[in-house]
Length: 463
Image (cartoon, rainbow, N blue to C red):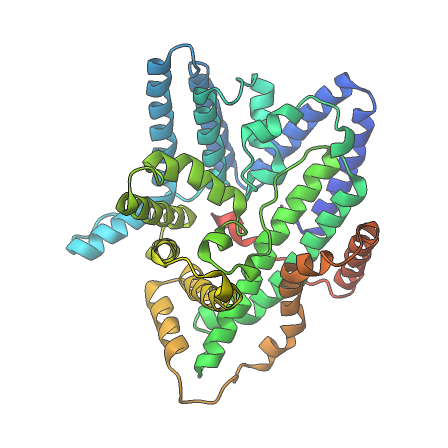
């Protein structure tokens, strides 16, 4: 069931009404509400495939049993159990997600044909694996207390964040479980988040995707460098609208049900450095990679060269986490290399800082768009051909794109407006912000109803 389907939206509205009714009953009602939410979450997981549901239950159950022995009372045993759990979790993730990639790579390098080992990817395994690992490590460090089985299952199963994030840490969600929502349940705020996210996805993400997909799949050709850059920019808008839209919907759904999620995007299109970009794009993943991978490798505590190595390794693995293809590895490597280069640059004097920010914004956004080419391309050959087209100046005239692409340009403005909105909000008096936010959400809701098209799956659902 897709979260943008009319059926899901209708059923979710009914669930919100049930949730509010149970909250009014006090602690017993909240306890019952969370069991209802667990049941709904499990039904949603099962609707994506019985095999994926079995894998989810098996992994969650096994890790819960392991977590019973993790703690500060016996650090040696705790470290051994953490190593066992991480090996098991990463091993299963590799089996389901990377076995085919591994056999294909070995065959390509050695010429020895190996039998296919594609098992299929259970829904959401990449995301709940990160949630499980972070819970075990935080429990080992003593930064969280052990959850009882109901709260543990709720934390991992809660459907708004389950399939594509945001990656919510146990210390962020567990204090809210079993407690009265109080101010966390903001009806107007939750509806605004949901509507804006829904509109970004359906108006911008879906329409841009339907227009430009043929150019990535070989069904249409591009002539000039300008056309290649235009398609890359449109894909930037598509993936932002799709993923940021989902994250806003998840935050809104959680808020309407009485829970608070962390922000996942903060205007990445205005980032003026790659470090700044990763503080704005998929924030919860970049923080996870920093806390559990980069710092574990040594962070910046072991010297300049080790820091550069750790950055590069972290981003390469972050790219590989997204998908079993060399295109994702190169995407992560481009970001890692860019972060390393930024650390090598001298600090500019204060008098030229505005020019550095402007030039940095141009270079970084161009670099990000070129990296998106590898992220989107189905094969390495497609990506390299596209990059060649981006740097092949001259030849055919600029902007020879077909009419279907030109028709979606009004929708392509939406992600740009959403990224620049914080700059406008700064000059709006605070007392008008609620009215402005509500008017924007209401306008998008009306436009979405008038121009609603067939919904497409979220891009990050396949990761």
